Image (cartoon, rainbow, N blue to C red):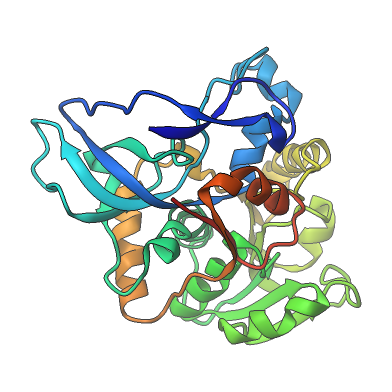
Length: 327
């Protein structure tokens, strides 16, 4: 099969399209013919080996990448199943977040991480869902404990996680404010934001408004500033940092989390990579998608041979919603 292989750290140019062996599913796995995948910061984080401290701690691999085929999301068709698999059979349309292997024509996924593809989505739309929507769901429902009627601010409302977070917060009955650039204000409104803030003209940490929950995708304000935007018992959920600038947001994240025992607000981190309920979450998201409460937002779609270009565009940090690859 064809796959983009990562043999060393670097720019998107290190991604090499080559022939590799088609994986064989174990007893508890399903072999999926990938029809579409998507790109996110998780991919270029591994591609560039950033932050370097993650290499020293063993998370990435010190000299060479631990993951050789990137691509955290997949949507496709079941090609074959292991002998212990009972829920799926060849021909089923599925989607999943295997965390690696999506930049290829086939990938093996454990049965307990795979879910039926939402019936009203194309493969491209379905591939935009798993990691970004799962992250937003984890941040709002599990870490943020969002409740109907609460005031929720989504900082970075126009990106992959942000576009799902705005829709999910509204679906959960919250009053949603989206923070984004001037060109994305209409997008934030169109997906359900009750109010929008143009960060090029207004600083949400200094305007005097208070929110019950701040979902922070951008990592562009110090923790102390973010706490000014919270109610005394509000929650600050940290999701990520600015694209291409890992060290500064990571430092801010740890300094913010370190302050958590000493302030009245809750400060937590949403880490979808360590989540063990991905399949259950995908089923929850499927219900919301099929009832029309959540719709993937796709900025651009690239053909498989243009994976490096797709990663390069996503790494710029200006994508509106998701960047998707058809295979």
